[in-house]
Amino acid sequence: MGEVRAVMAEAARRPKQCTQMGNQGHTNEGTRQLREWVEAGVIGPVREIHYWTNRPIWPQGIDRPTQAHNVPPTMDWNLWLGPAPERPYSPAYAPFNWRGWWDFGTGALGDMACHGMDAAFWALDLRYPTRVEPETTKLYEETAPKSSRVTYSFPARGDRGPVTVYWRDGGLWPPRPAGLPDTLSWPPRRSAARCGWARAARSWPACTATTRGCSTRRRTPSSGRQPAGGEVRAVARGVRGVDPRHEGRRANLSTFAGHAGPLTEMVLFGCLAVRAGQPLAVDPESGNVTNVKLAEEWLRPVPRRGWAL
Image 1 (cartoon, helix red, strand yellow):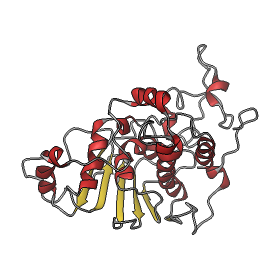
Image 2 (tube, one colour):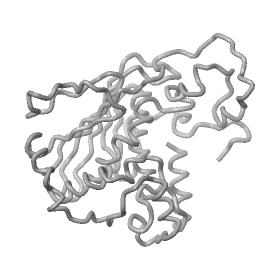
Image 3 (cartoon, rainbow, N blue to C red):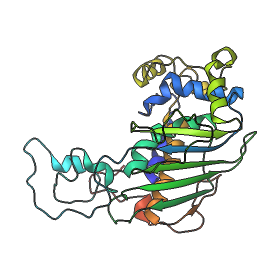
């Protein structure tokens, strides 16, 4: 969390610098369209959002390995460790399984939520939650649990009412959406990296039927409409025309200070709640946890010598 806020502060000090998070969906058409549907009132007020993922597809809920391994000759283990605490090399960490280890990654939630939860965070202007409640399988000191359900409670903001967001991973599925046609199976037969659905004022079939023709009723989002086409093109457009007065219009939209940093903070509150094994109460204005003192090394890890920010 401390690293995210440091990066956000640095980005804010350099308003003409072009930044872009690698949450690819934010630069494509689907996310833009979802926001426009919400702003146009096509699906009505959103009250609940359910997300789920087939992650983790790497080991989690395990202890540190004890078997000795030689470092591959093509690998610089010291460089790979970076600021993380010293430990012997093991294929349990690299090249892919690092995602489940708290020293290197943030489990399924941190790995996928910046993609999957991005659209709702942007479209509904969620910002900080007031409460984050974790439910998990057995907790381990160094790795994320095998599965978890995390419930975020967001307060009303502006014309939007309160929103509850549910995150599930490790094979957990949400309940069957009300009104889902009998011809559609639940859960979906094909697993996916990230999926989601919203419970709004209109029923599921009504939302689906309405949104098929919503292109004729679109209105431009308040942040302006940037052409879709992926994060590489977004960065290129930003480099050619960064305007600090209209960060979301002429530059790319998932900037560190304006969007990506706050989104990451929101996700990390879920990771912190999972590690703590208890609900967190959050001040929705300051982003400070108010009901428990979290371990300092979780918030501001001390980097190895020579790797300080």
